[in-house]
Image 1 (cartoon, rainbow, N blue to C red):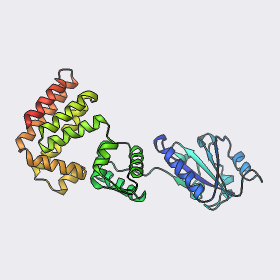
Image 2 (image 1 turned 135 degrees about the vertical axis):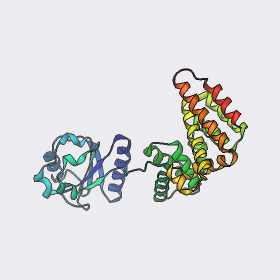
Image 3 (image 1 turned 135 degrees about the horizontal axis):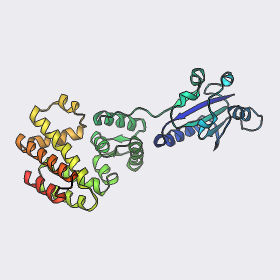
Image 4 (image 1 turned 180 degrees about the vertical axis):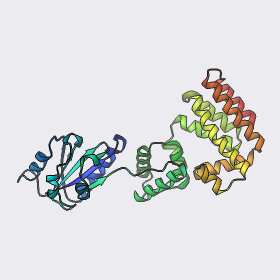
Length: 302
């Protein structure tokens, strides 16, 4: 009698969950057979119970399990727990519940992608938790930097795994993230934003030179607007953990914003914020000055 492992996820997460389910089956002592596409539940179960078709403990991957339709009530008594001799790993693109009665789900193992927090500060904590589970020594600031520059959760996990392998037991820090994760455009953006916060014109110019080669001026304006806005809010309110949490700042963003708030007075930040908004609106309507206008605005603020 078989046990069902239901993998239900969008394509971006499905492959990872499938690999994890297959690895779990192998670690539990199952021989994993090649994947296939079935069209009939009864035929699938009949094959599983045919003597000699499988070895003593076997797992089989069923691609596109949706095509088999709803799971028959008559087969619910045939389901066994996790220690069953046969294990079917069923792939669904999501919405698996409409195919299974509640009793069938209760007897099965369901693998779904976890809910990843939206706010950067909470997402950083989530990433640190995943790092601990993978035994990767991830520095807090490095996690914040990864969250700021890598939006897709599955890509974040992939990057985490790569960095963990590269570190080989060492600490994954900001320097490693910047060298191995950020592309040339991202590195230029980071230099521009950090240069603004540190009030270092030379670093900003270096960032502009790199961004001119591979970047787009409108996303650069949006990123700068976000960084200036954080600094302006901290300057106007006096800052504090409650303000940083209210705006969902990561520790890295909050530290940079505090640095900028201490180097510019309130009026300078307000003027720069208004200037970036004005340039962005002009750029979107075709009346902007491009990189030259943004460079001039930033350097004048210093």
